[in-house]
Amino acid sequence: MLKQLFLLFAFTGAAAAAHGQELYVYSEPASNMATGSLGVRLTNKFFPMDHADYTGYRLQPEVMYGFSKKLMLHASGYFSNMMQKQFEFEGASVYAKYRFISMDEVQTHFRMAAFVKGSLINNPFIPPMGEGHDHTAKPYNNEELDLDGSASGVSGGIIATQLLHKLALSGTVAYDRYFKNTKDELPLFFSKNALNYSLSAGYLLFPRKYKNYKQTNVNLYVEFLGKSNLDQYRRNYYVDMAPAVQFIINSNSRVDLGYRWQLYGDMDRVMDRSFLVRYEFNFYNIRKQQ
Image (cartoon, rainbow, N blue to C red; front, side, top):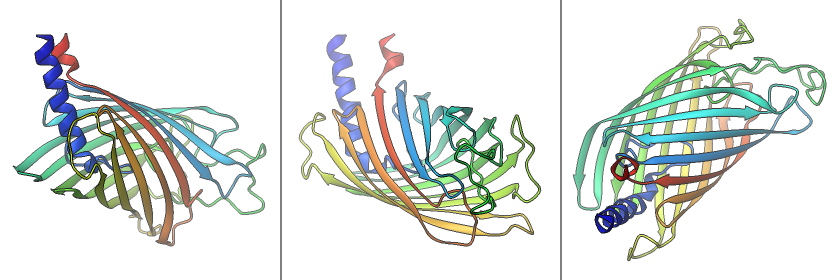
């Protein structure tokens, strides 16, 4: 029995490493994690903010679980000093993804998935005066909201991912609807509706030839992330570019390093560039080992 579990772990890990170029840093692929597997993730984001005299920091712990080959769930928490006077708990979100198309061939596949996300956030929409938040040097006029610590709301969309040997391409389109936060009403000058879209590419750089699941994988990514506000009087947009490098170690843990900045747009934002550092560890076949 132990030998069978070990072989199953090795096979699952090898498959994850072989398709590591789909593990995008700033977006989700249409593929899911292995059935019965548990992932824990810690994401750190650093933001040079326009309205403050310090660098904003957001910590996002996350737990992921593969219920089946078609369904997986994420649960995230958010902690930050960006919109409040000190480092505080901001809220939480739940994400579910369902893969409904899977066309697999040797070293290539095409997959599509639908997802929904809901967030409950307690941040103010406008940061407080003082203690590093400066509204006089540049008036605060943020027009960007998100469900990762900024605003309460729901989102739903479609993902399509194509794997071609060492290259993986993926696109996402999603609709966001924002609500009031637990401690603040949504200001009238904020758009309540937005369209999110992304185009991502991942390339397996190393190893050149796969031998075993203990080899460290190095993946390179470039992602283009955009948003358009849809309300009649707040129609504006941005498109960001986000290159990243990723290391997959022993097929069960990964380290992501990324940098994101704005390429185009006319949307006023609290920040238009950020750094990302993430660590993730996966426990395979949790359900089968019980």
